[in-house]
Image (cartoon, rainbow, N blue to C red; front, side):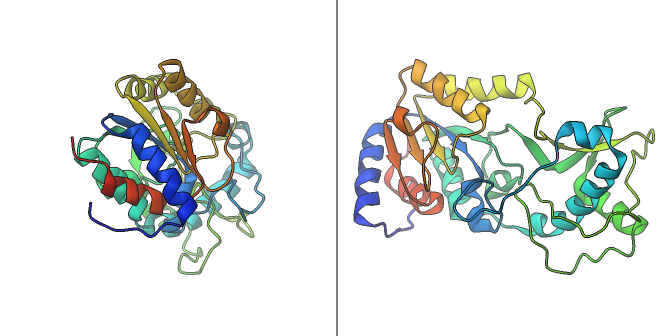
Length: 282
């Protein structure tokens, strides 16, 4: 990757230290919402992020009124969310994998942008908005097909208006009273996006897959995550126990700054692009 990125002197010095720590090592990459902000998807906790109260899994499963409201907002946001394009940070991660430097990427994001950018080994810790599944029979549906069904059943929905997008591809609807909630076309059961809701555990097999990627690597690079979510901090601890260098790239503080080999306080897109250009192909 030959893109040249201009960094300020302090960030450039931090980058040099990070490159020294990562040089010659196979790197596992852990990404958070800060990697996707340059694609127009907001961060939950970054500077200027709006205060949000995300729906919990208990609310979604147990309250029909709240579930209807969720589906209205989720559908309206989906159109904007699905139109987002991978940015240079996603491309840099894919380039590091293609060059043999990165073993793969573990992401806390549900936007699918790493896959679209060309990354081949992607562990989506919190699931993906690309799929919806039936909580009764397990049938899986493509979100694009479901969106067409939703619009056919709810022709009053305006999908062409500008909406305030949330990090998980939802918005806050004004009204949900008349919305027809989609059901499983196989058994009529309840549908749920294939994402981990607040209050829901990451599937054990998915976390084991992430752990395995870290265990088969020689360094961990964290980009765009404040590491507030426990899944991220647990992976950092796995790397520390194996005495692996841990490099963190994030605007603002993270829960693991004191444990990092190097912390770079900077934008994920710029720093990842510079890393991809500087780290030699293996």
